[in-house]
Length: 351
Image 1: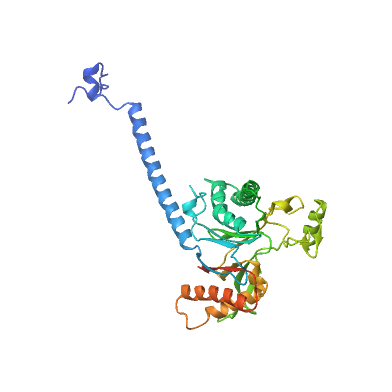
Image 2 (image 1 turned 90 degrees about the horizontal axis):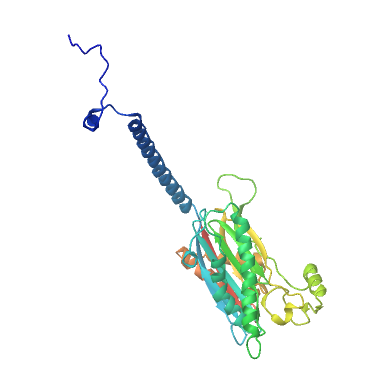
């Protein structure tokens, strides 16, 4: 019989006995905290992996955009149009907003009175846009993007007018602008003047059924600004300007533009119209072009022309088809008698 069976364990005292003392409550707490931290770390890693997988899936579901351009001088002495194609604008942006995977940018600038305003806008607009672009996590990204675009138009106009007024003699160039900014599958279209952006969307013809036929629908993504429109004319007249023969002061064909410093005091502004739409798997392409194209083509005719070329069996690959459609559309505009510069950007949409 062990004489110590019924006795309590001896109380250990002093440093010599610390090594064999029972575990303290503090030690137990430390172990529990360690386990808790380990569990939290594992959950964090799992969450990060799930988030990365989710982003990967989202990226794979995004449309692939490719831009093609055709430019014709027509009967003009010089080419006053300018354009920009940036299917991936990431290189211009320091960081993307947390909820965005890809940004694309396409633009057509149709100059008048010279090519300096259009070239300035083509060179500077997207860099100003990048500086104004929202960063990090944003609760209302849509509102911030719209503000960014409006601010970019205002600043581009102010910067050009400042440069134009410093010249001897002062530059009197102006330019229309139509810009397409795509965030993942959301399209923002901003425009000044009479260049246009139109979307081709294939819609079900009749009731939905197997083997259903689809017909092309032409969706306007921009709105023209000319002084004959009531709201535009009223603004010009309130500013002290006049509209004669459909032109501001009998000269300028558009009521909104970049540049045109001599007409800014007459009610010509640089505030764009802004429209937004979501791309779908039924969308085929966007046509972005100056008024030279639309003087001889309606929007629906231009869409139909592109579709006919895309269906031509002599073009095998998609890129070859879209390149041919873009070039042929611009050439056909000249053949139909357009004497103006013609610039066409064709943006293919592939989900």
